[in-house]
Image 1 (cartoon, rainbow, N blue to C red):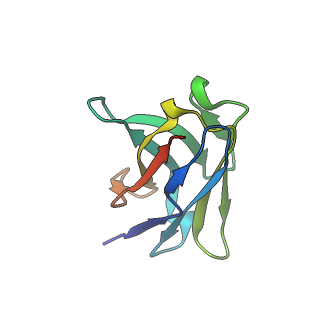
Image 2: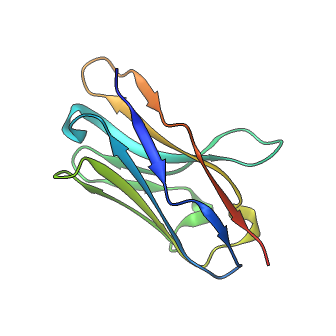
Image 3: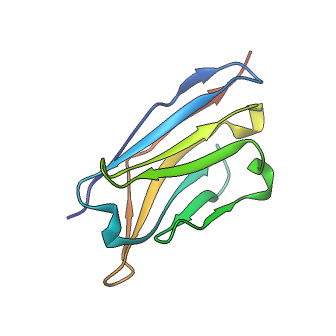
Length: 117
């Protein structure tokens, strides 16, 4: 069973920065894609950023130019660097990984990000 453990959430002021990390229990090469999703109160979970096995990245329009997703194959981690944070970025951020073998999705437990003055 794949386990994903997020860290790095917290409270930050508007305009600030935060870095989220997701540690996988197995090699990230076993995933066709890994990414970050978020869910704000009363809203559906939405894709924030995705990084494919070949390194191709995709971002939600709302975070382009502010967020950067990256992966460290040696440490089996996927990170999300968030800058110029806005109150609209507030929510629970979830790490996601899609298995290469059967396309099964795995989720972390989530980490809270609150952007507020």
